[in-house]
Image (cartoon, rainbow, N blue to C red; front, top):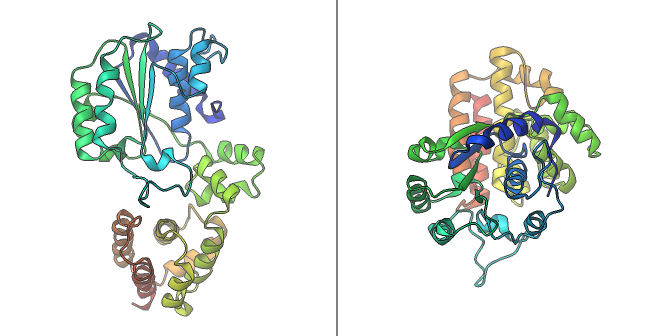
Length: 334
């Protein structure tokens, strides 16, 4: 179990204030990469702990805490997509990739758990992460359970995208917003983890410290990101087809993510004279933004949003990237 992060102290205290009158479902929402899942796991363990500390932190010594740490607590269920539950690169029998969805069968399997008495006589806790990964059938199945709640059954719904959830699920949950840490708090924590240039690493991920640490430790996409940024800074000289060829081994979602951040800064530089994700490129971004149409940039940003929805399953990744990069270059040709 990971300890609470420095920026979660106030949120933890607020959660403790809810314990006297807990809802049946608590919706923990906020940006990706800020530690929502870890906070939810800590709260779930605290709800099941036999001797929590005065501040609500689980004792880590009782039988309940030992079971929780061993992923064997009889009063706890973690529901998440197969893709988050298997080791990296692991495939299912038959060569199928693990699903990125939460299936209806996973939710239906909760019916027995929901109707059982708690093994330890207290709460039973179900944690669903990320809740927006439920397909339509799964979401409707969960709704039936929320409409007929049983005593001392708590659902912790963790989501990056609450706007994608059924309005009826939102209406039956108590919304609890988790805020992105300040730039100073995030950078200080990354520095403690040994990340070089933490301010830059933090900005690249939209000020999500956990994602910044993951990128720094894994180096995933770092080389391709450098190639992409080196090219899009000089759109007049950019060879979109050759660039797509050099990036085809990179996951399309990473390329789109970088383009979205770059275009956000282009729009911000044009309209406000400031940038968010690439502060070290401010002068270049301001210069580039003067040569593009605001309307055309908005259309391209919408195209990137649509492309991101298909980023995990493009029919032809190379052609997919070529189309986006050609559209980016056309912004400046116009």
